[in-house]
Image 1 (tube, one colour):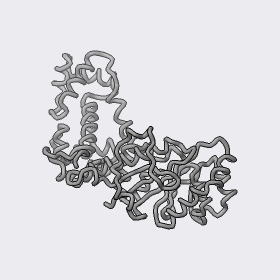
Image 2 (image 1 turned 45 degrees about the horizontal axis):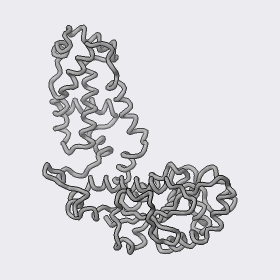
Image 3 (image 1 turned 90 degrees about the vertical axis):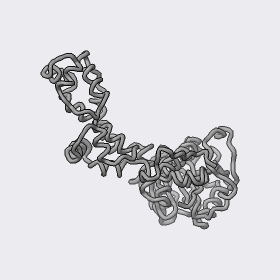
Length: 358
C-alpha cells in the first residue's frame, strides 16, 4: 500500500476538535493496518504504517502546536513532504461561528484558503472538508455542478450563494471525485475513514468503522447477549451455579453437576434459574459459550473447529446452528465481518512486532 499523507489545515477560528478526531481516526487506521500486516511492520517498523499526518497553515507550512506536543508520532519525515499529490489529503476543519453572517464574511474574505484549495485540487490531491468548511470549497469554485453536503443549519446559505452546487443532505459523507464533504463535526471520523476507503479499499475502512464508530448491527448483537450475562442473581443458589458454569465453559454439561455445585437438587436448580434469569442452566451456559465464541472469532487465529472445542462442543454443525440462531450469522460470516487481524500465518507465539522497531 502506498503511503498517504494527511495535511490537517489549521485555520483561525477552526474547531480544534476536528484536528484531534482526525488524528485519532488516522491512528486507528494505522493500528488496524498493523494487525492485518504484522510482517510488514516487523520488517520496516513505523515507516511501514500507511498513514502519516502533519498540521499545516494556510500557506502549506508545517505547524507545531504546543497542545499537540504529546500526540502520537505520525511517522512523518522529510521524504513525506514530496509525496505525489494523489497520495495527499487536505483536511479542512469547520469553523466556530456565531452567525451565518460571520460564516459569509469568513469564507468570502479567505483569499489564502481559496488559493490553497484551488492549487490542491488542480494538482490532483484529495480534499476532505468538514461541517461548514464546504463553504470554502464552494467559494474556490471547486463544487460547480458537483455534489456536496454541509450542516443542515447552513445549507440554505450555501444554496443561495452557490446555486450550482448539487447539495446532498441524504448522506453522512458525500464523495464527488476527489472531493469529500460531511455536514456534521461529529462525522469527522467517518470523513477520514471514507478517504481511507478510496485509497485502501473496503476492508480496512470497515474495520476502522467497526472499532470506533457506532454500528447498529454490531451493537445489537452485543446488546442481545449482555443483559442476561450481566444479570445479578438474587440468591446464593443461582450465584454459586453461575460461578461454577463460568469457571470452565469447555467442560461437558450435566445438570446433576450444576445442582451439586449449588448444593441443591437438579429440579430445584432448574426452577431457581428460570425464576431468576428466565432460562434454564443449559440456556445460560449456551449464551456464555456464544459470547466466548464471538470474542475468539474476533481476536484469535483459531479455526472454527478449535473454537467449537474451546466452547465445550464436540459437534461443529450443532454449534453452528446455535451460533446462527443467536447472531443471525454463521461463525465464518461473523469472523469475516468483525475480525480485526490478518491471516493467521503471520501471528506466531514468537512474533515480536512493535511500533518501536527501527
